[in-house]
Image (tube, rainbow, N blue to C red):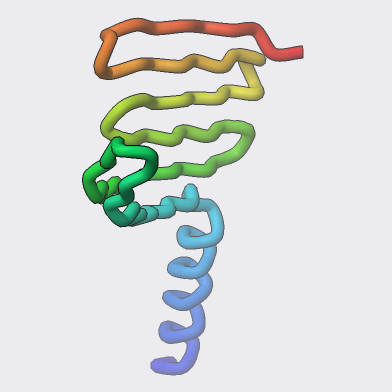
Length: 90
């Protein structure tokens, strides 16, 4: 009986995990550089990426991109300028 309950709970757990979206967190670091008298400070950035069935979203501090293939739409959001662009996909 214990073995059947364990197997049943594993099947239920693995089914739920296999249907979940994928989340990726990317940390990137750019070193400070100086070129031709101009300098650029070091930067650290964190990007978040979600992948689902026919959907994708990428969020960073500066912008966000959302793609919905079911609706054939792509949305780009610029957080600094507070602008929004929606495009139709082929």
